[in-house]
Image (cartoon, helix red, strand yellow):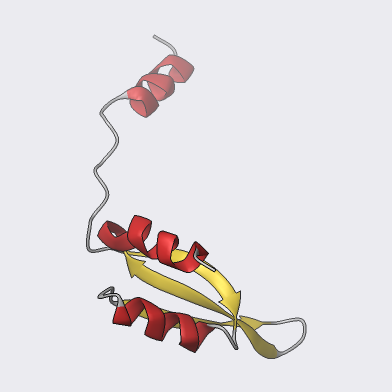
Length: 84
């Protein structure tokens, strides 16, 4: 068996791991002005959310906010975010 075959067998072995329901994942990337409003909306719906300000190296300013939620709440959070 060649090195390539061993490597391919190693890559194909095992099943994908189940995602951790408590891991933080990104639900949205919004403007910095919308971020706090969206965080309060999610928290009023019972979803614990965290906002992380994104720093733009080129312009040297913070202009975006990443909304992070638990993986278990991701589908509900995205449905709330996409509502008008």
